[in-house]
Length: 134
Image 1: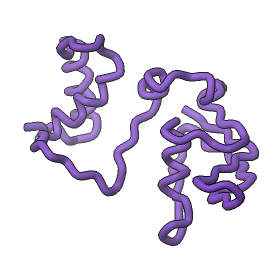
Image 2: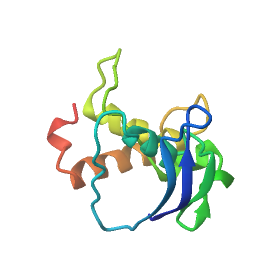
Image 3: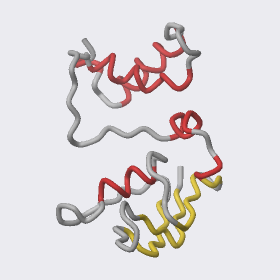
Image 4: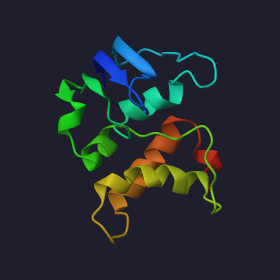
């Protein structure tokens, strides 16, 4: 997966942009660090990259597709996002949390398929988390 961000500007309030004219390329296979003081726009930028917030101007290409042209459900199949501060009101297991990543692939009001469960187990094995699954 790759991102190409061009001339990105975002603002919660008119005339006060948090992000202004950002140009950035993020390529598959690399690790990146997003560093800044509190309130500098790090989480806002991640929400924009995940399609949760719309920029004021500029474009974001995700795998050579304009992010603005994708439906939220299509973006959810490509990108997942777990916020740093997130209150969980139910005691999910590691297995259940990973399985939730398959939600965009299932039909509404249907159970997860055998394929969803197999993919979840495969992910837990690849990330060496299978011992923490239950």
